[in-house]
Length: 243
Ligand SMILES: [Zn+2]
Image (tube, rainbow, N blue to C red; front, side, top):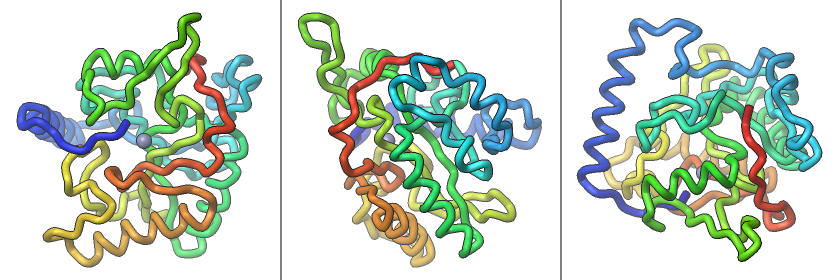
């Protein structure tokens, strides 16, 4: 979704959510659905990729990148809606797009870095749910169906051709400092924002953008974490359920 600005009310909600997350971290266990997981459980990921998803060309990215850290916020209540909208934390992308991420991860690994993903393929019907919660094109890409009920317009995430992600230190799994948290819909999340940002934070954001651009992705101006795969228009809007 493309979000340019935010109401104070929504910002307050995000701040409250952030506080809630921090308060739960100390008591978190590996089974806490709000905690990031690695993609090392390949059997689990493969098993849950449905036949329909395979037929549409989607693959489970952790199958290709076992070290990928999953922090799929829509599978938790720690997202801007305050609700869990995915049944499970999944990172599915078009195979061709996932192969590009493999190259990104390989390049980062040489520098002791890796990737953490916040969102990958997003079903069209989930896009509609997000729209119902926040029917504002500044915040959510508007989903449109044609007269036959087929998806006509939506997010590039609905095509399995966009990914939201950040950099981690590979050894610790800790995210490198970035300008904002995920889905912070303020000007501070803009790709060209400098404001009072620390030089190290600006360098981290630039490092992420450079490695993604080197492998066929382009960033969204308003969200430092969002990247579209070039050629995204070749892939259809999909409404295959995550499971
Ligand atoms: Zn995105």
